[in-house]
Amino acid sequence: MPTVYVVGLEPFNLGLLEKIPGADDIVIRELLSAGEAVEVPPGFRFHDLIALSEKRLGDGASPDAILNYWDFPGSCLAPLLCLRNGLPGPRLDAVAAFEHKYWARQEMAACVPEATPKVCYVDPFAEEPASEISLPYPYWIKPIIGHSSFLGFRVEDEDDLHVAISAIRKHIGHFGNPFDEFMEFVQAPPEVAKVGGCHCIVEEIISADAQVTLEGYVWEGRVVTYGHIDSVRESQSHSSFSRYVYPSQLPSGVLKRMEDVIARLLTHVGYDNAPFNAEFFWDAGSDRISLLEVNTRISKSHCPLFQDVDGASHQKVALDLALGREPDFPGRNGQWPMAAKFMVRLFQDGEITRTPSAPEIHLMQSRYPEALVQILVKQGQRLSHLSFQDSYSFEIADIFVGGRSDSELLHKHSDIMELLHFEVGLTAPVNDEVH
Image 1 (tube, rainbow, N blue to C red):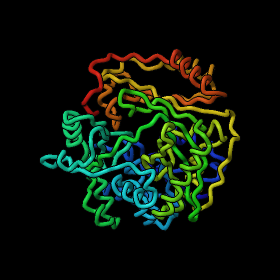
Image 2: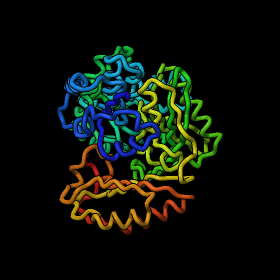
Image 3: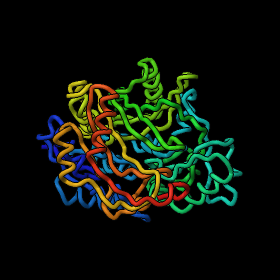
Image 4: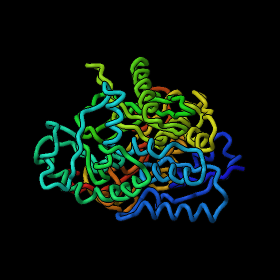
C-alpha cells in the first residue's frame, strides 16, 4: 500500500482523510505534528523543519506522497520535500510566485491586469516607511508572507499607518525570516529578489459585497475548477470571516469569468500537478472582478463542506495529485445541497472562563448529527495569546453544518450556539494590539 506522509497532521483532518474513498488502501503517517508545522514558535527556522522532516522520512517507510493542506511553512516545505525525494509536485518557483505576495501581484499584472489591484512594496523598518508608499489612503498593508490576515491592517490615515508599522515591526520576522530561508532555493526575478520576507505590500482596497473562493487543481497543464465557495465577512473593517457557504450563490457568468482569470494566471506562471484555491471579489455595481490571492493548497476549512455536498472531502483531490494521479472527485453526491462553516468570533480581548461541556456537545450532536464542531480555545486561555489571529478579532470555535437553504443553515447555527455555552471575561476591544 502507498505510504502518504502528512505535514501538520491532527485529529480533525485525519478523521476526514480516513473517510475519503480509497483511504483504506493507503497508509497515512504524520511527518510533522500540527505543533511543529502550524503552531510554529517565534524564531523557528525553515532549515530546521527540512532537517527534521528528512530525518523522519529516512527513519520511516519510503514515501509515496507528501501531503499538505496548511499555509506557510507547510505550503513551501511539502513541495521542496517532494522535489528532493523524487515525488510528484509543483515547481518550486511556481509555488514561490504565489506565496510571495509581491511576486504574485507582478505575475497577475502581466497576464490578468483587469483583475489585479494596484500595489507597491514597503520596508516597514525604513526610517520613513510612508515615503515609500505610492498609493493614497485608504489601503491595506500586509506582510509579503503570512496567512489568516495576520498583521494585515486597513489604513485610513497616518495614525493608522503608525499603529500598523509598530505592530508589524514586532512580529513580521516570525514568518518573514523563515520565508527568506525558503527563497534561497528559488531564483526570483530581479524586481522580486530585492523584496524580502520582512517587507510588506500596500494594496488598494478591492473589498466588495461578494467574495468567493475557487477550489481547483492543475493536471498536466489542464486547469480544473470543481468548487465555488462564498465568503461572508464581518467587523468594522470587513476583514474577519463570518462564514463560508458552498456552493456559491453568485451568477454563473461571474464565476465563469473568475475561472478564466485563474486559468490564464496559473498557465502563465507554470503551476502544474497541484491543487490551488483563489480568492476573488465581485462588485455587482461595476461588475468588476478582482483577484485577491492564490493559495498553493486546498483550503482545509472547506473540507467538511465538500463532504456534505459532494460526498467526499476535497482532500481526495490533494491526495490524488500527491500520488501522481489525475483527481477523480465526486460531484453532488453528498447528503445536503448546501453546507456552511460558521466562525465564532469575539471582538474584545478577555479570558475564557467556560467552554462547552461534554453533555452539551453530545446533545448538540444528537440533535444535529450532521454537524461538526471544533472548539479552538480552552478554559483559562487568554484570547490575545491565541496564535495567528487577524488584527481585529479572535476565532474561538468553528461550526460545520449542512442544510437545504441558506435560511436553514442560519437557523441551525443559531440553535447550535444556544446549545453550546462559552463564557468569557471580556476586557479591552481588539483595536491596535496584534495577538
